[in-house]
Image (cartoon, rainbow, N blue to C red; front, side, top):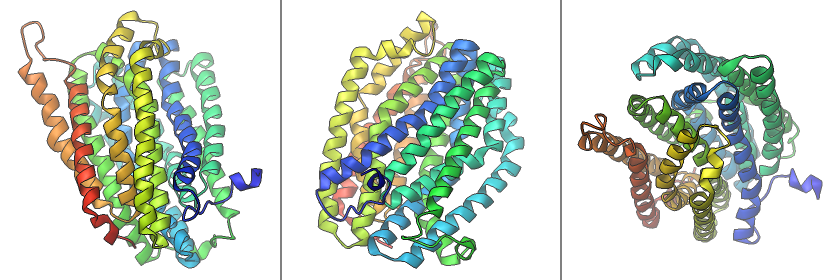
Length: 456
């Protein structure tokens, strides 16, 4: 039984909803553990350093996410290729896919470190980052960037492992790294007084450990693919396919991160208290979103394996059942946040004003989680089938053409002598509106069925 937990799962057979749920659960726990990285960072700096340090970590997050878009794209492309080749039983193609992912990631890390590091401080200044938190933001981002290989390799290699149907191993490695991260956070900040830089260093070390565990796992999976120097050499056709499939997902995240950075500039104008409140709700929001992201990733693997095997009727059945389960989970989470959300805010700070402000903003966001459940589930199905362009265009429309203009529009139209910058809630209102419109567009394009023609 224990050995079976670590074995790849063939989701082209058996009960559809049970297979999806059993595959999703370890991934959900893993995503929650991964969210603990940033959450523990926020709790530790908020409790031991102060609310301004909490604001600094939050202000750095959108820029860090932007730096990761390249690896998110590689991971998405690898997941799709691995799941389809695994479903089709193509060992040689699977071997080249895994090897080329490792090589492309190494090259990407080197390029990013060399060219992005000098730009950190100028970008923070350009975004109107308050002077009181500027140095902390810069320290956090530079340390994270220098150690970005750990974060990159874990996300990509765990995506490969999940593409093979093994969501349990990735969970186990992440749990180990999470415990290490929590311990190092406390040691570096509470005992060694390293401040914001300490939490960044703790995260880098923990993620490097998780990526090493993933590499060791793949090296032992020789019954499914070959893991050697031959496959590490870049092969044009595989690199192109990884990029073709992953680029839309990477661009989607880049679009989202760009919008977050633009909106962060607006957020920074409302002052340190509002910035800190946004950090708190982002951390709670991260946990609330986990079921949606987990079902989306699970349905990508499920769709990829079944498309690889040519079982399109089973893909459609999985889309219906998986989406219904995801919507049910989001409904429960929304109710919990509305009833008990304020209690969660006290974990991050002892400032009553900050807790009350955070909860007011969180209530606005909570109503949009059900819409995100629909978007993530059906987008996962389309991506797994090889259609990564449609989710990208939907993200482009909802994030750039809808969210950013609405946020700035509400801010401008609600300006008064008492509120010279306008209504600060414009950030949350615009986000919920983009989620709802995104869900509607995703349903329409999924129903059209063009994704069925995109298999590799």
